Length: 86
Image (cartoon, rainbow, N blue to C red; front, side, top):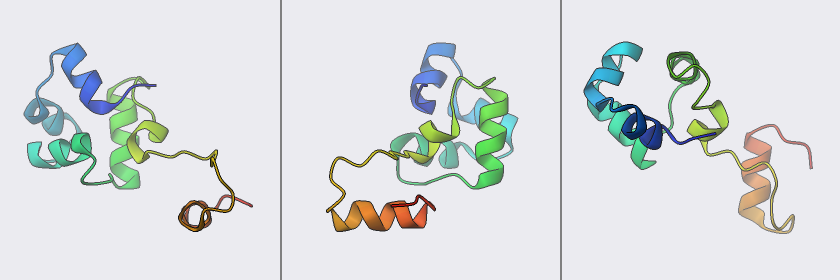
């Protein structure tokens, strides 16, 4: 698993070039890399395919399905929103 930003840097691909490949703007790629935006399900699929699985949906969506504290209300809420059973 690798973050998109790391993948792009390692492969020497600009945000603009990668954005063209997955049909979004360079600013969208930048916001995803900085964590300011989550990609749509369609974009997640395109990114995973374009990176040949080097960047996964888990990487893109910052999913941490193992909570450190089940009593943490925000963790429970996040898990509920992701459809994780308690």
